[in-house]
Length: 289
Ligand SMILES: [Ca+2]
Image (cartoon, rainbow, N blue to C red; front, side, top):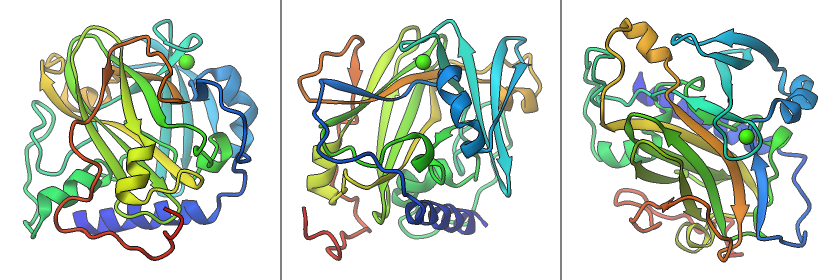
């Protein structure tokens, strides 16, 4: 079933590429930075109809007020949790929960049920583990609606940056990017200490060179918390409520030129952008690289 879930997500991601019709025009002059998305309600509200979204005032399991942006339809219930007060752009940042990792340690959350082993499993999970649970509520994932609120053409910039924060837990985050036909997605895994804002960075030029990512045709961006490195979730909450916790924040998703200054410490995945063993790069349709 896990493999089926992965295939289903890959299928949805492919479908998202076929509907991309509102791409920003290429050739725009480049400032040092260009904001992609900052989770401000004032920016989301005008898009609510296109996103088929409803903005609701709510309270989370820890009693904190937040705005819940519900995009539940079909089999994918997408949800953004927008918190006011601790942000690096505007006034709001989005809360992230823990994305369930197949077979991974989830302290206090679930009994571990092993899925069937298969060849090259760890490499497959590097690229698809964050999607395997089919959970689009605890992560941020633009697949399928990317064209509504994000540009497709990122080619004028060198870097993708976004800011993340978690007060008590040191966390692993994964950032995944797809163009209209790349597979597996470009995935970077980054370990972030607790207690202050950090900036995650993805090198779009390196991804283009090593993977053939076409930065003119980006169709999805996903950001997920994929592991707790240090610290524990609040065990006074029942397991279901722990699952609902939004303990990390993400804000100020932006494109940058390489010389753009960074306000917070920058964290990168130190590994290369080349495909991991077991995958090979298709040259079909990538003559431009
Ligand atoms: Ca913001």
